[in-house]
Image (cartoon, rainbow, N blue to C red; front, side, top):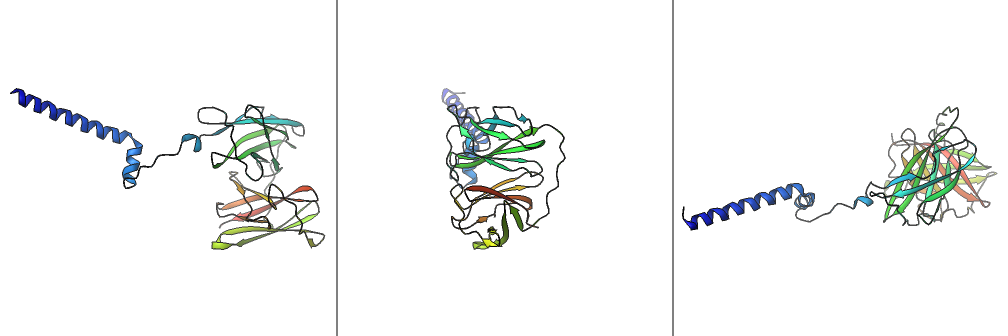
Length: 270
């Protein structure tokens, strides 16, 4: 074989090697696959910390003595284990902590305080024996997140059945009426009215920057919905994101300089 032929053969071999390398690189590079599947528009995945890799790390024992005042401390950690320190205000607070027994009883809504290390803590009393779940509800990096941890209060525990569905609830001398209706765009809405001694209460005080606050917990798997009010002047909440199931609703409103919590059992969907 002449020198020219050998050079040409060597060049062809290099071209083949580079072509195979490019194909292998494309097969291993998800960004290249995404670019092809979106018509040539390059699209990157969201950073891991903005996805599902935040976690709640308890800093205090998760077993408490029932009826005794304790303290719950925790931090929010990113995918690398570092403490997340920056949180955004959501309904007048940077951290909401919802604690409920797993039979959907004994609801508490707390607001922990963050220390210089970035950890959160709050006094906590689990009133009776049982298994409880704490939901840390917060916003960071422009995304709203909910993380949880089980808490335990030792002793004899007999779970109570979910109360039957009802459109009225009575709490602290107030009668609360629930109306399930449809708003704009046929989106389901929950509307509440508060009465006392037969007269509708028209002077509810602001609570967490609104007329009220609503948490929905689905029976069985404790699927959590923190529902924002539709406006400042009504006790109305949009629920279009709630999946079908039986829920326990916890409505909180403020009147007479006190926060009151009305609980309902409510069915969503068929």
